[in-house]
Image 1 (cartoon, rainbow, N blue to C red):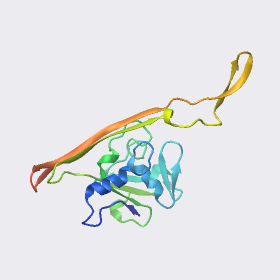
Image 2 (cartoon, rainbow, N blue to C red; image 1 turned 180 degrees about the vertical axis):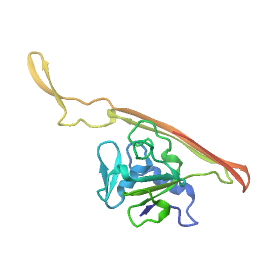
Image 3 (spheres, helix red, strand yellow; image 1 turned 90 degrees about the horizontal axis):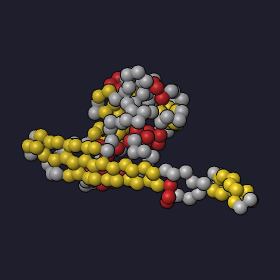
Image 4 (tube, rainbow, N blue to C red; image 1 turned 90 degrees about the vertical axis):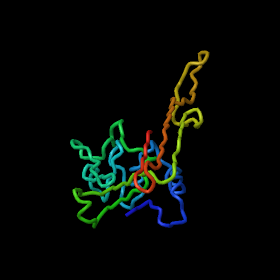
Length: 188
């Protein structure tokens, strides 16, 4: 079982958020952190996770206790498709159970990934982010070359395919009625 939680009262929630945001991940899908679980490996090339050798289609994924599985594909919603509904910056904690989990986490032969989203609190808080990834900042791959004719001589030159990614968004949360009603909004 892997959990990301704020266990001590002297650690503020922003410290926890920074630690999750600063972990290396490609594409900002919070569920990719499940690969850090012992016995978890990628299942195919589409982002599924296999626990203990069981197909990634036999996992169960919940968010705030609600079902987060695709009806037809039996995988996490948006996992191998483009659209995705839960931003990494809106996840407060997540938990991975791989075996001997209680009945509340049933409906799976593989693992269970459970996430809890952030909520508002008595003070206004939020964040804005922009992640930029560009092949301009990377090195040439020595194995990616092309042979070109340069003045009658064929020369091998390195090539670097263009890769530019912009991921931006933010969130804001706060009180509506102090100590009773809160709001939290996230966009990614």
